[in-house]
Image 1 (cartoon, rainbow, N blue to C red):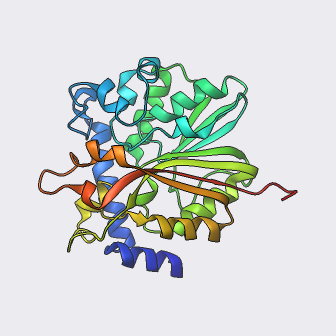
Image 2: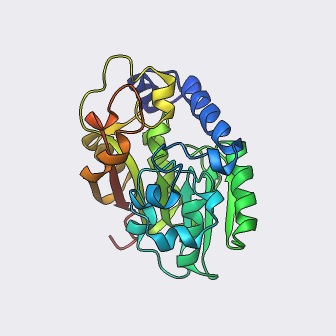
Length: 274
């Protein structure tokens, strides 16, 4: 493990291998549930459109993709901030059931392509099945860790992610990898949670809390440092106060919105002339 990885894992309160195991177990179980039972957000299980709308998706977005691909696991709509163009090559970190990939594929068209990477075999299998259902010929799903992307150098125009980077035990390495695979001038546009207040005692060491996108959150300042250290410029992180409405439903025993909020996180790899 690198020094950065060791520090990040220690800050999260869990050994990196235990953290990955908790995440893999949680999302592997979700991936193998029936579509009707797989939404982890209780607010959207009865009405997927309502759950998606509260994360920034339009009714048109939900209608455009087979409902099996929407698992209610994200905290935003990264395609809404990505400004995708026709022909773009897009990478989704932690692609889950593939919902954001399929939305991106509609925007980049047949001349573009979308690659989703997920470390959970069950999720990759489910996403590949969803790709067939959605007839998404320009979308591909690969098994891999976001700290070690199975993607060549400088091969991607835009990177998306939806509430996944917080799960990593080595977030600085995630951003270094993102920088590596982006072409000069490429953009990072992700939705994730940010830490707004100190976590209650024991929460950062609780595997369930880490795996449910709370225990591993970082502050805005920490994320800005990670991104700039990786080489990104024009870094912008904007917390979304409206996300309290669904984040408070993530835990039956406490209100996670007291210390985490969803945020849009953006950065650019400088082009050669910069």
